[in-house]
Image 1 (cartoon, rainbow, N blue to C red):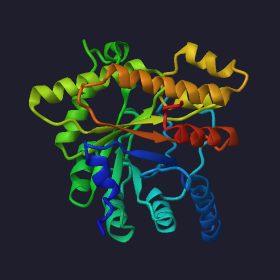
Image 2 (tube, helix red, strand yellow):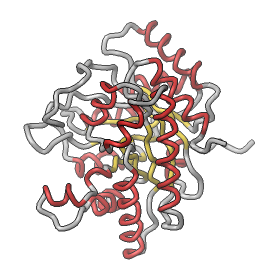
Image 3 (cartoon, rainbow, N blue to C red):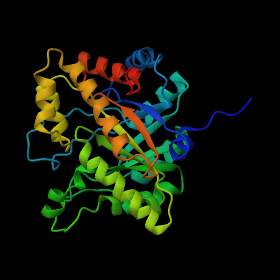
Length: 314
């Protein structure tokens, strides 16, 4: 019998897409029995969805992320690697584990994630802001530490790849495509985007990344595009607090719809279609991730509906 490819090999393979479903660990201090119950509930709901694996997020307070007030109060959650190990054992599916590098015990965390918890796919997240004081390695140092122990990817942020963002940084043109290639050369084997609510920055980023890779004779990494359906103003504000660009027309389309979650799901499908059409033939392999950024039932239902559609409604 042929061996099932690991999640890390699927993420790194440019020849096939990958489909992932995101989850957030239970709150810090949740008793083991309750953690298992939460895990079982997530598995039961996702069992019918043909995902390649799960993303387990590392939730941080990130006070320097935005001048906006955080719409949802921060709550500490269980360690992403520990919960990912429980989810993998229980579901039989591997997990991609997110980790913020702003951790003074980062190297020990990576060792435990790889050796004790058995994870082969990690996704590194840099500091939310260059302001303030952070403990732990830089993203460059973290990549060097991680590459010795596990395969890893990084995030890519299309919102940084706009002319407006470049101007704010004193640049004549955005440079996120250069950041991606730098991380790829440092060992990153894939990239995961933030939630996409405006296709234009993502299209620009994918095209520029592809062109830079061609110029240097390098095969582009897979880019997994993330989609997070919403149905409430408060959740949209949280999406924006996270740094996601939401055009006013898209916000209006969702919030003024008779069924906002349905409008959000259809909008996500339309955004992906636009990206696929505009980026056809550029040579960047793509994957899809669906997540909910809230615990609101309608929005969780929307994630499952979106995944069932596989973004190509009849």
